[in-house]
Image (spheres, rainbow, N blue to C red):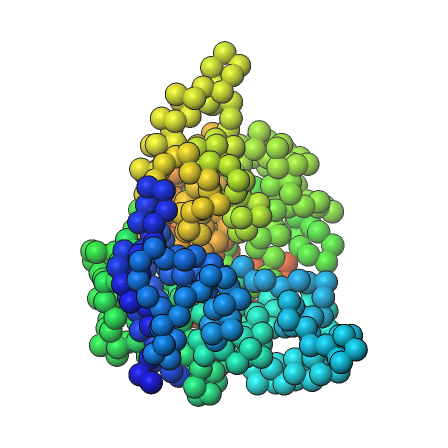
Length: 500
């Protein structure tokens, strides 16, 4: 059979939106097939149509050449389709075995749970991924990379024909990403088809055999990866060429807005000191667990500190809570947009005013006209794909949700903006819009602090870079320094001395 899975002319409607429009894709056995498109292009809807979460209004799905119809995710699983989602479906208080067999436990003839057999099969599934691990280990004690392997282990134990991986590297460190790549190649060698959804072009070029590009719910092209270039892929995805992926605008260095001295948190932060100026983007680089996010949470009053001082515009402040930090002119765009950045059940316009509700009142009451006008302006400026500002944020794609978080903080009256992984899960076209927001802030004399795990982004947008390791600052590098390079940033991140 030429194709293990085939979608033909699938169409899916939502109120005011055609999420999929006559969409087709064909995936071969033992193929790593990339799927890419801007946020809102329809990738998530396509995944949900394939996995039985959504039922298309038009079109057909074929598995091994036979027409199939999925009414539930369980129907898709039985047909051999599994999905490892960006937000892992792991119950952290349960064991590896319990997670792998959740909802389909093996029982003895007496109706009791057959843990002997389940443990054996769970261990074999994890062994196939290169992890000989005790299946009774509690998942919450394991790292993100291993938790993701457990999700893949579920799919292997189900003997899936197609495993969909939705942004699988978005929360992983460098070592975990390498491990995942090796696992994907092993699955390919075993004849398993992989649909690899990613915004990271380098991953597609490293892993995939073919790539399908989507735009506005439609199929744009499917090409062998060897026949594509970076620019050709971007042009197909966004409908235009992106000459400069990092539109850095250098501004005049202005007043000292934030000074941190000897910030301590026992076991987390060790004498962290730095300065941030208006008119500049200060980048924070380092490996996963280096303490970058923890530093910003401590400064913002989200986590307690055991020592150190914080000065804003020369005045010593004590941010005992995020509310106090906001009052002192700070804004923090968190790494976890769903858990800490948004109220998913609320509308776009309501989320956009959360950080500065006083600015949207008239005579002590929220002014609907002002809110609507500002919301429409933010949606247009950030190119948030939505049928209406009344749409619930939870219904948006991940990248569009991130844009709402950025819009929320852009509407605050802050001087210091902390962006923690601001472009995670966002396509290349949307990234440029985020960078332009940063440019506008620094041109207005604001200070932007950007935490990023993508070194090209750090180098492309930062005026200075601070490198952290294990809760300590290892180096500070100016843009015009000879050390302003990926090699020297990684050297510092691994504990090396830049002056040697």
